[in-house]
Image (cartoon, rainbow, N blue to C red):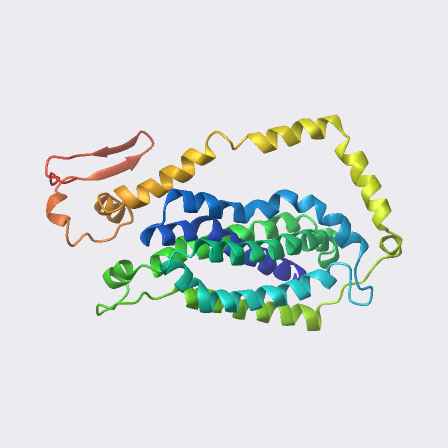
Length: 306
């Protein structure tokens, strides 16, 4: 069970980075006047995930035997990632406010490369950290990256909003949010250091005799046979093209919704979440119902500006 906890924490930290640089960063930049071309440029931060398969042969072939095949990469990369978290805590908020897109891209790309290599190592570490009876729980641990995305997007964005915090969290009006960008990355860095120290000191990785005989040439030859599989080639084409149609529409629609419609629909969102609409309650004499057939919105008393 300790191995399952370690895996869950490692995958969660991956999700925190992905959630921030794939979702939260676009909203923060839009609030400061960024253009869609800037967001398109920043989308390349996630490109290292497309070449993950190139990393695996290196990780399987070159490592410190006394430290462990996967631990040789996980621990140093986690320490390096923690340092990057502290740098982001210091600089990233200024980069966002001043729309320094290139700086955000460089630091974000560097962090993503580290997480990609760490992800490959952690995936291979599942069979070592878990016993045979718990192998099936490895897939469950991988879903913890969703929790990380929730923390860095669904939770962070409201807590980073001054208006949200003043309306629902603070007893008195304040000019700063509950959780700033700097504090968010500072907490993430401290969490990363804590988990990495625990893995470094108390978690051991034992190598089997079969693994010790693996060479770089063996790994490459196996991969060559794997990628010559005709069914895999077809699957690769499907995986590369399946998102091309709707992903651009989804991303653009989300950002347009945030910039142009969110304030106008604010009273709907508040009522849907069960939050008291102090400013708009006089207009809501009728109900908003959400059901299997959709939702029915009665507009008789809605103000004209909506």
